[in-house]
Image (cartoon, rainbow, N blue to C red; front, side, top):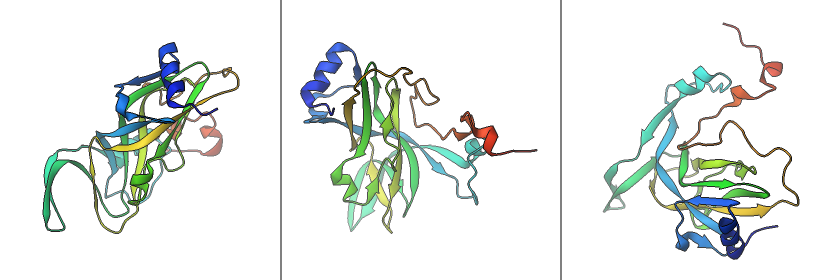
Length: 203
């Protein structure tokens, strides 16, 4: 069952949904708008092949960055603000400003705002489900699908969380590798339980 704004507020009162910080104007009829934060990860230019199955590779493949206040020239005009510059067809890992938690029988899904999607930006790459029990910021897989750079303002409402109620509470609430995140989470495929059965890595 999809939760309406009234349902979301009731679930917050009951403690099964937490949103921090919570701004009433970001609550929509059946979801809650979330904003992009200033810290993000970008693939290093020297990466010539991607093999995210060792912790060492992942740590060396990404560069951690923080958006700064800058002035940019766009179509003959100057714009000043804190921007994340997305190169043409660029990909970054960023996070929401908002930290959320769902418990009991509530889960959430992150969707791109339609207004942003119409400017050729995607934020979830088919990976927007959050399990019951997840708590933390939401990592977003942001892609610029244009042939030109895109300046994404920090603090912009880029997505919407929609909340669902499961028929029964899960037997095993989420206690996974990404819970508790306070900034964008790098991929941790190397922690998958079945990983060693699939790939043998030798020194």
